[in-house]
Image 1 (cartoon, one colour):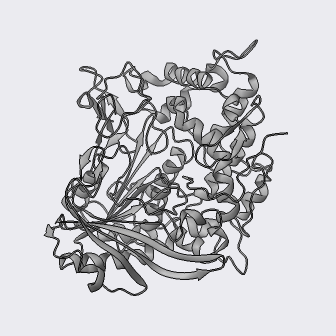
Image 2 (cartoon, one colour):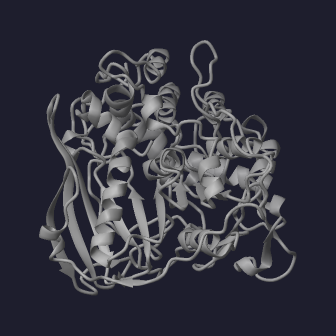
Image 3 (spheres, one colour):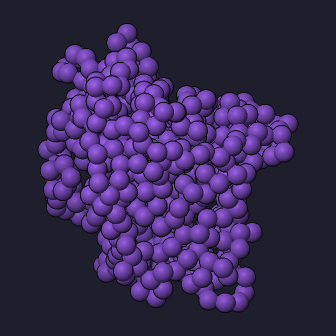
Length: 570
């Protein structure tokens, strides 16, 4: 019998969680797509007066406050002077309490003429500070660059996290309707503050925020000019079911004991005993031994992910224990489970639940273990049971749950819940982005290759389907960037600090396609925070080009391997 989590009914704060239809234009090329004009700067003309002077249907402002330069700092950097506006929309009495779409907007005194919608992570429920951070370290966020930024709770509070899935409207607001309601209001508020609306609008976020972003590419294609999706859980319900399935696999090999999840207070099985940190490090080193030099540089980074999947085999390349486990080998059972988890979750009849996961040295990262062993028991069961499933119901024990039944529930509807979890959480027809494409809008996606909750392979599948719907090539309006070694949104043995937002703006407004984006390691002294998982052999400021799929960052044969200038995308 496996220890059960004791968190049924708890207000969990976060969850970060492929069928793609055709549709697109295969006769457009880069020369035929419109070139959008650049945004022009503006100056804030009103702040405090917005509280009484601004009106918008179904909207109540609660405060409008001038914030002096340096009052807010992000990553040790002082944020310039701006106006902070708070409020709520569509306040209502729901089936189990009072609901509203809470939000804050931060409006810079020196405005760059742009609007940024910040998609937040997890199950939302919190109005995170509207800085417009986009993953990979907080040094290049949208507010610092002069964007007007909005953040929201997506229609419920943290205290409602465990129950909002029982309210039909709250589910829809979380999935997509909050963004639809907030967007026109935010643009109207910008017009009231600056005397004109935004010249250009951008939507971005990581994890569930990446999901929000890919949903917006289809549902809000006419409202935004650039979309920046990090680790997009655009198949979040499937990924969450797959996580529970994975926990059940690892439960077969765990030895004993329980731990308390620090985020939820849930008591869960200590699945880290099924694959210890030493054993994960062993697998990481074996992957490096087989794949590190495929990009022509033995540097602790496996840049050629696709080639590595062909070269590396758990069965052949990881030693099998002949005696006790001591970190130098895996048992036959462990190897079987590890291979199955990377191949991808399946129902008892063999139907794929979610995508495969690539082998990457980032398996040694602490984020990989947290998602596979802890969050799969403490977070995913609540989301699958009460938010994505129809009808909603608490999951008693994830380690004994009926996976087939829960997989069926994420596509089910009834007279009360008329949109299934897969309907309200995922982008309709994600391969048909013809509306934004024809407008001249652009999409950039980045994804850690060692992401343990939302698979990089799923983003590759999305991009391949998008390309197929556009005559085999979507690179003139959409690009995908894998980040080798990176775990979920950040961390792992990776160069995980980068500025994709500036690259996106240049592509949208100047026509400068991002053929690569330079990423930096967050070593000692990094203002945005140090990544403790960097190998000691790396330079603390190592740089690498992130290349658009399917290109690979390849060493040119001379020069320091710590410098991105000596690598090219091939």
